[in-house]
Length: 372
Image 1 (cartoon, rainbow, N blue to C red):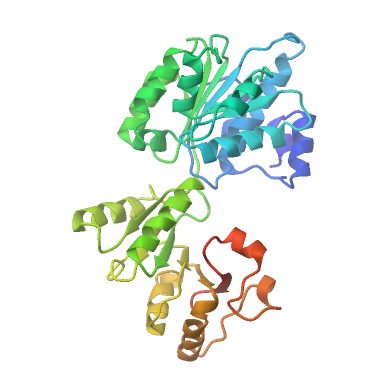
Image 2 (tube, rainbow, N blue to C red):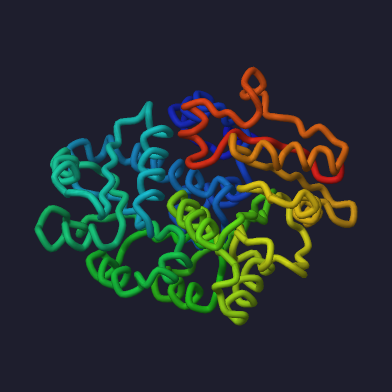
């Protein structure tokens, strides 16, 4: 199947070709026809499944279809509610990228920054608004946003919204919306609270579910502080992650591990001490964010993936100060670990300014498939 089979209009097909997408993902194939049919929908899908395009594409098509009948419409017709400003910005960019050959305008509002530029965007009368709950409610209370003509409401990453304590803000936002609307809700998990929220917000919804091809990664750091810091970076990038280390209680570690095993968390960040005795099937990637000081530890780390004949791969980051550890690992394993091509012309471990921006705080990537 390709995007033509989903009966998308030509401007959307052109934008998909422009970014190199030709085949829809499972969640796109399942969700897009129902959204185009104006059904309420609950989508169970994690980051990495193509979830955003699954609602952005049909929403843009619906707006375009009604444009001739409403040529002077200046109300906000679509609201996408996101738990974080990073995810809100990504969704906004998706609307602009996929809608590059269409006329709909999109604005993005979130907290943590001044509202001046966002208010100026709103004065351009966008049809699509992507927002985080707190800033949205602030701007509504100041009279900058009215949602009484809204047609489509999207609640993205509903489980994360609940985890972050936004349930009351979500309810306050919903109180501002017209009852007659299409509602779409996406969540990585369908825990009881998420199911309960869906029952309150949606009318006779269609349920679709998809899983990413690579589901879990185990990341190793040397220190507890490093593990916590890395989790914060991952969460800012809308990647669900959790840390286990010696400062966590035994019950907290067990709870984190249970969530990881169940697939509710995609990335587990661990120190070596906390990971002792860790037994988790289906880990697709092991990532050494920092190389271990003891070379035998490296062997134990990468052995957590590619178990029982399953596929798996390990990646390591190495900066200049860790080159000695890399050489010790190569001597122990009697294997020359291949360095990423982008660093082949420089001494091992030395990093370019571009790579330093791509991998903040770390050196160039070094990789070796597990079991080689």
